[in-house]
Image (cartoon, rainbow, N blue to C red; front, top):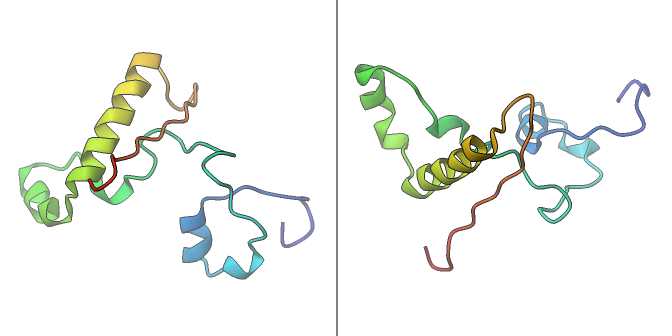
Amino acid sequence: MLEGRYDAIVLAAAGVVRLGLTGHVRERLSLEASCPRGAGRDGGADTRARRARARMVRPLDHAATRAATAAERSLLARLEGGCQIPVGALRRSPAGA
């Protein structure tokens, strides 16, 4: 896009921040405009590590994120969603949770 090859591009905010390109952001999509991919916000909390590595990452566990991820993954499984069939999902915690 910076080379003028595209009129617009939609990227994940985390990647744009990591690359130091936030000055090029013109708009952030609201949840009403674009629902995120189900279980897509859980990168650091998701692991399939063996027991030793699981102990290392246990302090990073966040119960609310784990619950949201489980709920969204359950929905994706029920709808048979995935890479070939994208499904947006967003679980919101009750107020005060």
